[in-house]
Amino acid sequence: MSTDHIQQANNPTYRLTVLIIMVLIAGFSQGMLLPLLAIMLEQIGVSSSLNGLNATALYIGVLIASPFIEKPIRKYGYKPVITIGLILIIGSLLLFPLWQAFWFWFVLRMIVGIGDNMIHYSTQVWITTTSPESKRGRNISIYGLAFGLGFGAGPAMTRLLSINEYLPFVIAALTSLASWLFVLALKNEWPESEIETATNTGSWYRYKTVVKLAWFALLPGFCYGFLEASIHGNYPVYALRSGLTIELVSILLPAFVIGGLITQFPLGLLSDRIGRKRLLSIVTLLGGTTFFSMIWLEQNTALLLIAFVLAGAFVGSLYSLGVMYLADLLPKNLLPTGNVMTAISFGLGSITGPLIGGIMIDFIETGSIYFSIGSILIIVFSLSLFFKEKEQEQSVPKTA
Image (cartoon, rainbow, N blue to C red; front, top):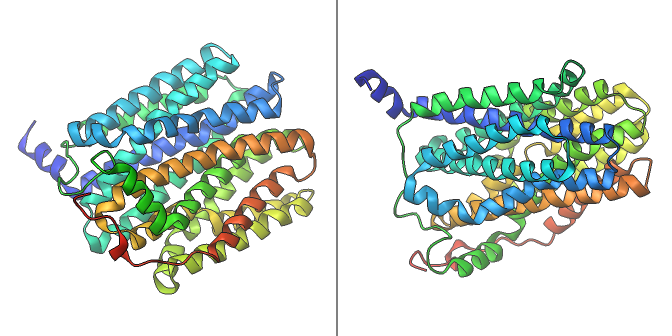
């Protein structure tokens, strides 16, 4: 490698740019798979309950991978873990169209979930640990923005099904392969040795301490996983059964993501001014109210589209706000453990959402998906009223 290439690989701006591209493409693949496979399963006559069950497979993969990612990163560094995650995703994407069988897709979705989590956790920790404190909030916001942008573009790939059902999967695989070429140019790095992780001694005590200090900060991740998986996994099925077209669904889903993108930075700045907890209470209340209103707005396409944008604007930043609030509540040595627990919380929400949503679609025809998502948001709002912030001095000692 030439001197110029070595300098470029070590350049913090170049590294951040590559990691942001990685997150964007990972979000694109994830955003494509949920509605695309839901539509394909619905077209071959799979029930909405089983369809929802299949959608949970990706997040089961996220949960499976979560407790085991830290140790390989500390031993081998970020770059090898990201590369393995990409290989798992690319291989699965190319296998999906070969055999349309429920359990075959279930296993492939689990593998994609494992790969996604390897990429997300590696890039998230790499960005947060290498960003200067003065720029950390900005970089995390860019991270969330990139994922949202990719996730929002993904559902548009459903339109390619009318051309060839292989086409969306091939395009997603090629974009993932292209991102790997950028990663190859990066210099491998490892987390700082002084940062303790949940894989070291006292891990269960550290988990309990995180819950004690910051249990409410873990709920936005659960809530966002619940609504994201429900919207992208259940909503296409609900929409088709309610007489809405695939074309309209391919507009509504990105509209939700666009709403979140618009408010990502403003909400981050607002949280600095009025406090993370207060803002989380406000957005969950407004988001829940907006989803409940969709029950009556469904017959008006224009109003439904506006409601989707507003809902995204209110709750599209829940995950990143939860991560920011966690950083406020925990001492630095507990942040890696908190990040793992946030990923687990997100995975649990993502599994619960499609399961509940699929069952409700089978038993409640009108407004079932809106009621499901609105209810979980109102529940989180109610719990925010009971959370009392504790002093960081109660945290586990660094040697624990």
